[in-house]
Length: 148
Image (cartoon, rainbow, N blue to C red; front, top):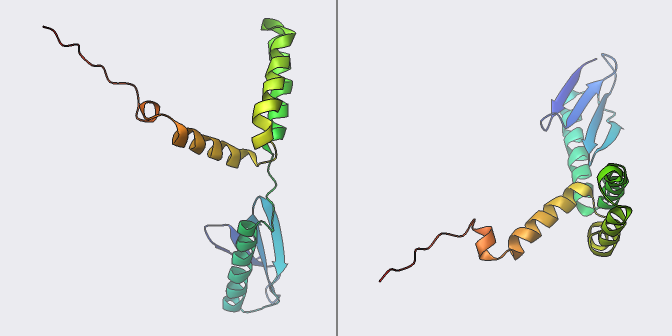
């Protein structure tokens, strides 16, 4: 089976038989896509595959293709389940309950339905932009007292 890769391996074009048409396979937004190109010439198949792939990337950017990612809410629920188990030996029941209350009241209303990776990036950027200058510029500098 002849195969060629494009876009650093994110797009593959291949033939199932020596004289058959070319096919394309791509992964966009963690989803796999395949398409029969109906071309027997390599150059025409490459051009069609490139247009198709760039169209998929555009659909992803416009929100027409939703990546298969866990949401922040799903990760938070998994964390709370794990926290229950870990806290049994060293923490009280109210510790996990209070953690859950704070999570659902303050964090999940904003981050809950957002993809997990993107949520972390947004959160980090927000913290950096809202941080006081003393925090964002590093530890405070020591100052010497003037002696008389």
